[in-house]
Image 1 (cartoon, one colour):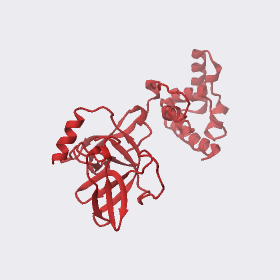
Image 2 (cartoon, helix red, strand yellow):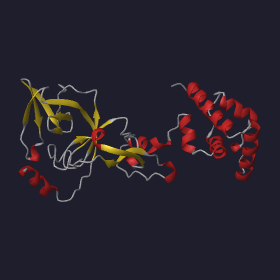
Image 3 (tube, helix red, strand yellow):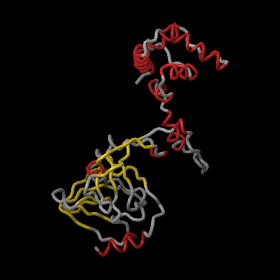
Image 4 (cartoon, rainbow, N blue to C red):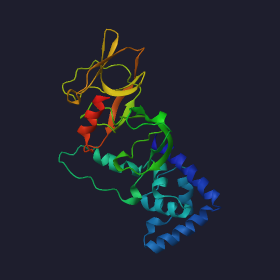
Length: 272
């Protein structure tokens, strides 16, 4: 969306806040003058004309004026800034994705910069952590939870899967208990050649008895569920698409790399 259009929408939103609070543009001017005096910085000041121009979408206010507007309308600075296209919550993600040449630690976000995302906090009765499943089908309650590097995910609007504690199909590439992001638009097995296991496409597949996260191939009308060589699992075959349906391609994964008694759980799972 172009900047002018963003400013116009944000301006209308600010005007609605002002009107709702029963403030005139002169009132905003007077209050901002007090803020500027207290801060000893004229940049916090908003004249009557400035307030009118901002509400009409003529320009984007600077950071000090955004601060005054946030204080006067009793809204979070990040919320006001977001209406003008500045998403503070993207800061950590953008910093991590810049691809700088040297390995480095990512700094912790300050409390006021931390955004929240929707995460499951309560599962439906009968949900078993041992089994792989789609989150949308097993979550009873969602809540807004700060999750650091996961802040760019919105699990209610996207499709995500949970890899069951007994699903070692792609272990150790994808560990049991992982959350995987699924692109439901990619439901056909890719024919692009890959050179390493990290480039090989991974799919989330619905079977008659549940779900599985694995590599896949199609062979003479059958879908092959291909495990990682170190998983100690066998290749499984299903009539395709009558017995197996591709939900989508896995495009992201969040997992722990250290778990409790992983080898023991894997051996126990094989016996079942």
